[in-house]
Length: 268
Image 1: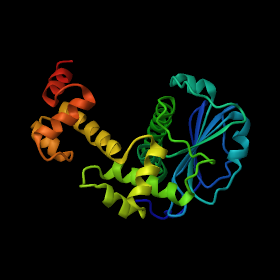
Image 2: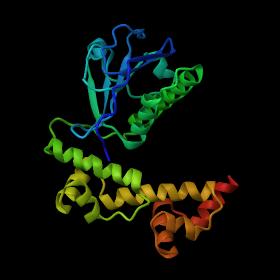
Image 3: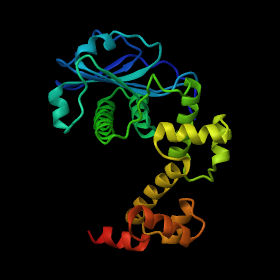
Image 4: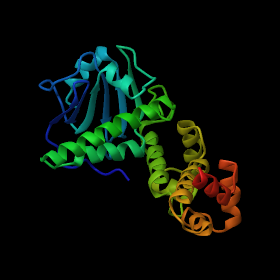
């Protein structure tokens, strides 16, 4: 669940390479070394009053974004086109373009780890560099894969409902191992079931049940390959109360039974 903002983080500049600079803080970041003609990615990590967002800004608006003071700590990446080419990025914004997306839980967790690292030693810089590269690569992987949900200004969802729906998605992403039900998720997010059902499909192009099943089955597939736990235990840990229901759901998703999937992946 989103909590209030932590204590302000001092402005910090990390030059990963001549092509890639990372800033942490409120801004502005005018004193920092910025690569030429950069694309900018800004991560606003959210609070009780505002949803977590990701903004992708073309090179023509980089100076505008660098000089902003949002009043809250955020992570800002400045990356040159040549740097993006190195990670195989396919999607690039136009120079004057700004694209806003809801920030997925996985990217938010990486950004928070980068923000909250308070080591001042060389080890701290190595850690922050690794997290910055992970954040950059995972952001473009999600962008090129069409996985980011636009924060559309013309949506008929209110800002309050959008925050509640994002909280519902975060509950699924982070607490999928618990006994989550449509009624329980709606109650925890302050929505009724009908509004949750309709709004969730509108925002994420899937139902609550589909999102929960995808999260649980993805974890089950990982556990089948990386652990030697019995299949029945893996199914139970991922919310399936018996082998038959787990096998049916897994087969629909991956086209193989859990045992065949494990055997094929281990053999490969």
